[in-house]
Image 1: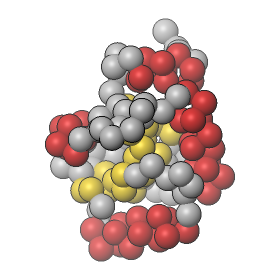
Image 2: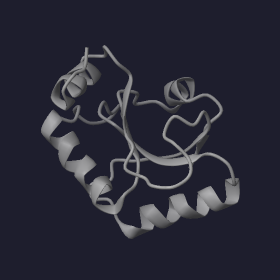
Image 3: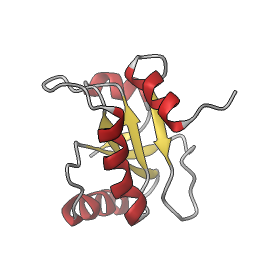
Image 4: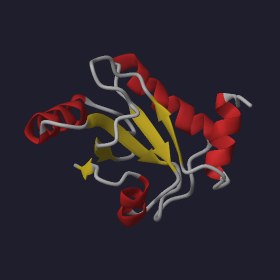
Length: 120
């Protein structure tokens, strides 16, 4: 069964799924690539410094699919709402960059979700 974006985000917030990928990037690699180069943050707002940081990290690491990651569940703040998530995701769509929304507030859990990936 295909789920709507709202249904998927609700599943994410309820812990039924661990992450959702918004593959807005263009290029030779796909968001299904095993190794990812992940820049986590709140991105409220996303700015040019974030984009440049991921580009530099990607050029240094040479292999891996570059993407940003936002945790909807934060260890220090209330969880993001569906509307807050969707607003933040729009920023990445505008600049053509892939973003992953996860429900993992801790890096060791993110590392379990994305084995072999590099975190910036």
